[in-house]
Image (tube, rainbow, N blue to C red; front, side, top):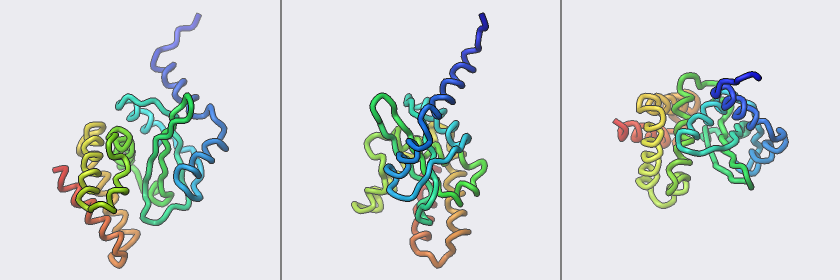
Length: 192
């Protein structure tokens, strides 16, 4: 009888769990969760980071990575979707943003997983209608949870990357991008 190392068994069960559902099922999840022309994509790096971080907060879920036709300023979004016996963590990443990411991916995914962990206010964008301060406070709580998961340096690096990416791709003439960059810089300041 062959004895398998426990780590290998856990790894294989997590890996096969993600692909136990047909791609068409994940395609429908992407379209329904994010309202738009998003498609399921197989991104092993984002999936592995997401699974690891979800485990750190005590959540088990099938990770579904979506990409596609997102608004230019919508860089990353996530949702936790229970579905019968399974839970799904859906993360949508703008294709241009994903191509530009390298070491910052850990902080970006940690922030998205932290939205699941901060139970009281997972959708900070909904607070924008209430007040900018409520939005920033919500995102700061999420950033602090991300810091707990991967460290302050990773979260700050990810936020700086968002700022630089928007500066390089949207320019100074895009007022909404400049407002988002201002908010990101404020969040960096709050983390220090």
